[in-house]
Length: 433
Image (cartoon, rainbow, N blue to C red):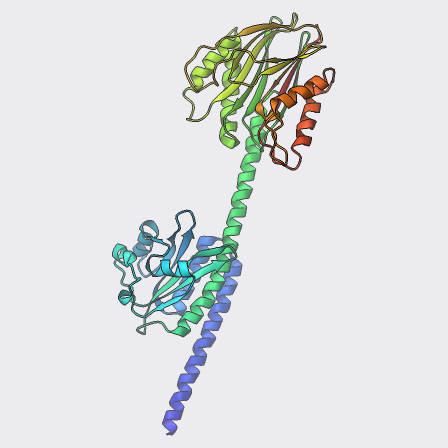
């Protein structure tokens, strides 16, 4: 009788001892989680600890891929490193399929005493690796944003199957793991965002270095002024002024399809090509023809609308060639003319010969060149400003000295509270005669 009493006490003490060890492990894991935000390092440390404490042959974390609606092995730890690598490279589990897929769909943990006897067991991982799954626990990892993934632990070493107590410990551990994963992913996203913003800042600086150093260019009786405001940090609008000698100057404006870094990089190439061609060719249509030939080799989907004009800065005569660009405005002392000249398609679309037209400015005349960001601005009601409204604004302010500033202020006021829909570039040519 006394011997039986001693046996009960020993089992009780062993149980208390294990619970103390498990509690110590959970405290240690909590400290580990707080010590690093590196996702790969964190998961490996935690799951190695879980595998050791629960005396299991293997454990894994399958992360939820929302785009594929599937689970993918992120961490797989077993006695064989090759097995772990194979799992991460080749095995994907659809949500709803297999034990892990079931847990992911129903957000319920499972304790499986005999995996191969369970109808939900797929065995794909075992087939790929040669590992034999016997008993396992699968627990959903759920965060503030919903399902994160599924954690599994397989094959206890010194007993046939996992117990409900093992599930309780593993669930407690997984709650900490879910929080750690969310924190780690948030940290990773923050670093990527910071790196991306740094790259954009650098791209913006480089891009602006390709534009004229000053937004004002003076030669002879002409003064050319420009405003360039990207929709984001970098954009696809461009402009340039070129002194050609013998009283001539070139004025160029363009809009590259697309936004962001790709458009900014291509903009730099186009300006470089344009400056070379502007000094080599003596007509605007020849420059556009050569640019078009170069751009037909551009990456698919990139094209350029443009206007290039060569001006006699003494007489006010200009020769203009256009490629799919919005009309420009000719502002006299009495009226505003919409100059919708004959134009070819945007550069980079098809092999074509561009043409040119001639105009003659008189004393006090101005030309206003623009990109579609000047009239594509939207207000809170989703209404576009429109080209006609912009033209009406210019007509109402024929004699405004700071016309570019006025237009920019009007666009900003119209689209107040809205993200800029497109890059904005304005170029004004004044002829004083």
